[in-house]
Image (cartoon, rainbow, N blue to C red; front, top):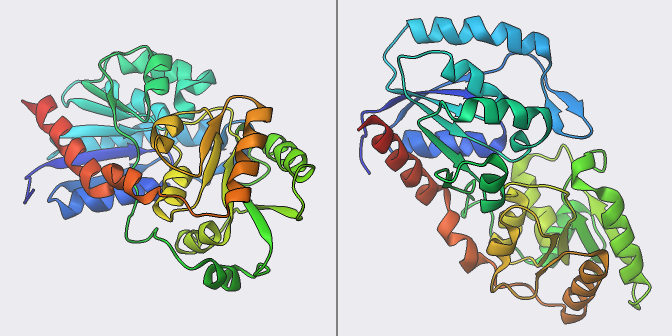
Length: 316
């Protein structure tokens, strides 16, 4: 698409890297984007990840109102459920709400569900999220993947970059162990049980606070990526691993089963025993996956076109 002539006010809790990609692709396609984040610093919440406090949300309301008084916007795009109240309490502009995953459960989910019915369109990451939200007309749009940044790199080269032993066996748990919803203890248990059935030493590695442009090296350095989350929307790390042709073993969360459909060696397990079996199978094969072709459909370029189409439908 060329210049779209659209001006969108984006409300967002925290400017995650995937959100920045979303803004970049929309602007490349001619959409004028004004981003208004919730003020303040991120606070770590072990159960739900990164959150801001009540004080910051109270400060956010007048900021949104001041921005709206300046005018010139076609619609509001609320990103993450906790921004929805600030969008739906004005009545002059249509609202598109994008949900990220944890905002359909717990307290965040209560806020989201209370406000979602007032939104003109809602996007979710997966069918699981749509079912939890209870809004059957929600559009399923996974967060996109940067196919240029995430690509296959020679494993030896990647290991030299991250400082891992060239001949080691490494499983990457691509989150902080402190992030409770990612269930690091289950990852540890799966690797320990797999070790009992595997002749070589298996090392479980974690990453957090790594610059995003370095993540590609950690993914390519791993023999497999292990995801043991209790709940997800459309985990970017799975798609990034697939774009690098790195095998993924995961719990059945979000859209992971759909993303891994036809990808070998990889798999989804519903029990610890299944996860152990899948991980052992991946390690015994020693092969990279065929995942890259499976994630082309969720490149950011295609996601950008889908969002613009939703904007157009809302405005017409």
